[in-house]
Image 1 (spheres, each protein chain N blue to C red):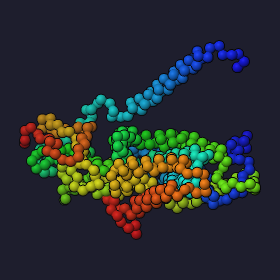
Image 2: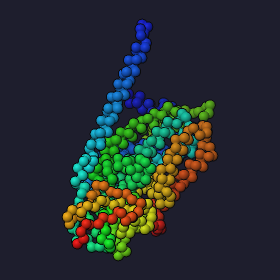
Image 3: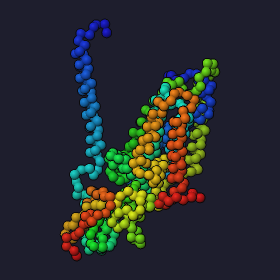
Image 4: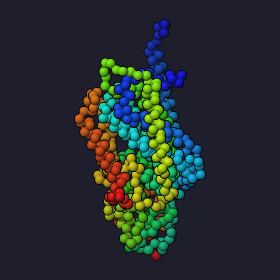
Length: 341
Length: 168
């Protein structure tokens, strides 16, 4: 029965080409593993976390100082969340430059985009939970950006925050999403994603007449398990040596010197400094989103995406990376440009 | 099915009725869910009394001063001519709390360096509009601020000022 279940998302035999590491760099697998790790560590943390102002901060402190391995588990959950955003973006890049988004992989592409949004949502809702100054003001800034969206912006902000400011209602909403709604959405979306990969005949490889086929168990299974072990080791080591930040308790009356949105939203905050809010927060992100949705209909199945989509995608991505790194490293107090050294 | 359908129209009619009933039930569940969420939010009720706070006596606020009102989390700015403004401290750019800097006589936002004058008007962007105002009422000698109803404004104009009826 176990085998039967396994073969729902895996074929019995696989081409040697599909086993090549550089075909995927194991990015999708790494992302899936990290989501699984987030489920585990999140489950543990949720036993001790209390989603109310003040108690939230105290319970995180309690987890870090009183519980055996508490600090390690929080670090692991915190850093895996950040690495997950990076991994899933790299996965997106690999799939794009391999042009693996055309039918029959169109729905895999769409569910992958949805998973990217879910990862961002999970990160953002989790950001508030420690209820420290960093969390409180980052969420204040990021959710204030919502209000700039024309027509629906203010309503949207009200729905997200449960009011006009970050309060206990916000914490309760974010906690519900982070621990119930989003994990459930992840499960559904991931199973759909994997099933579509299987239906499309696995990862995209050059078709040829005589392919050498190897059995999935053990050839693929051993490779996947050993790569999973390497990724887990890396995350554990990182979490052992770098502590997740916990600043002073949230104080709505005192804005700290430097306030930034979470790093994956910093490019939006940067855009907002350079151009009209509607253009920065509505037109441009929407245009890029539509471009990604429209991609599977642009051109034909090929080795690489055609020139025009490649140009648009690359320039968008470079701009986002440039803006994000400016926001992370080159902005000091009052969002003045500074050097990081 | 071995037997031929006796009355195909009647059957499809019944199917449509079932689908219609199903949709009605779905709509009911959805609206029930929405009203559940809306009713649970604190502060959406009719009880507007709790939004009105007492700032203090008129004599506490000298002309040409800006005072932080702790209970309302806002500023009471009294201009030189005695007119009053209750100014929100939420920056109109991205919602940071704006402190009043006494030495330079202006509000300076720590997040993106927006600057506002004592009327709350923008002196330096990126803030897109002046700080929000709250309605002021005078009850005998005390000043009441309605913090439940912020007023958005592009900039300062004289009709925004509230003057106490009897000075002194």
